[in-house]
Image (tube, rainbow over the protein chains, first blue to last red):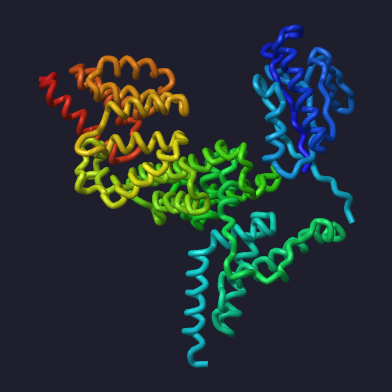
Length: 119
Length: 416
């Protein structure tokens, strides 16, 4: 079963670049990556640039509307994701717990839709 | 043909009997093999109907439970095939590897209920759903019985159950015993679910059609049998047994709650009490303390002969605090201090927790009793009135009303 692990966090609570906690967090991400790769469960994973770089698009009565900023202004926002392929939720939770930002943010686990080819 | 009717009735009774006793085991076995809650439930229902016909014609099989398991498995595989055809994935059948029902089912079916309990009590499900699912699948309560026990509408519980079953599938919750590194956390959720079932039954003024305390004791018994030697399971069982042992004494003839210290100890179930104490001693001897062992030890001190051991209890609450840093534990600590003579200090503690416990009925009741002991009758009266307004049962309203009248009488006729 494939799960997307959505990494949410509040930028204000994240360690700042240059602080030892920042290096520790990056080492944590590196270790999580390596573990997922070594276990053969990692399908994909990326970090996202900050919400100040976000652009949102909607189509309203046939017209494309483009706005600066993210879809929803919340304290915690999406900072990156992993997609992993594991047998069940418990396994997915075990990998999610390796993500260092879970200590100050939230990891949301969402099963991917299963589009098996018909016939 | 003369005896056809009585024979059919006898077979019907036998099927009922087996389903009542072994439904949990059969269902657990089918879910584990078929991998789907709803399909397993429907298949077992079909198997029971098939049994009525077959057993009516050719008599009871040698191993009826194994018969039901095998037929249920076949019915379930048929349903899986149909579902697969429906979604036009027939060729995928070979790849998903359907369970093989042709293998001889042994008479001694392995008990898979532990896996089922852990799936039903998965922390990824809501607490109320955990309770309802566990009662439905492991204890075999009907939707109506669950609804009555929780004073909820039958349709609401039905909906909750089907949503929870769909969630187990969609979220990918496995029917598996958790890995050792997840065991403690996962067991904690299982025990809190069972304990919630127990306490819900215990505070009810009258037992519904199915006594939830009994169901909780049954569940914790199953857990202990399937996972012997776990001190927290033993501790939780001892805690429930200690509480159950006081059951007959907890309400007096007028229907009012009787606090533990004032209970008629002759009404306690001393056989169960001894059993609980022995079990707790076994658990503690394993030297792996945990929150349920501590709670059981507190209950044990509270029931000490001839009087509660308040000193020991306050130490135990200190131990409980790191496991459960909740205002409720802080409240109990305060109550213990009062019993040791530090009533002022206890009141300070309680008042410090005021913000966290706004609207929590036991806080008002405890505060009222402390104020009464300090002779602050007017404030005590006000606190009692708040506690009564928030009281969950008629029995506790009666008890608190009596205390309130006691204070009013003692403080004299203030309105002439």
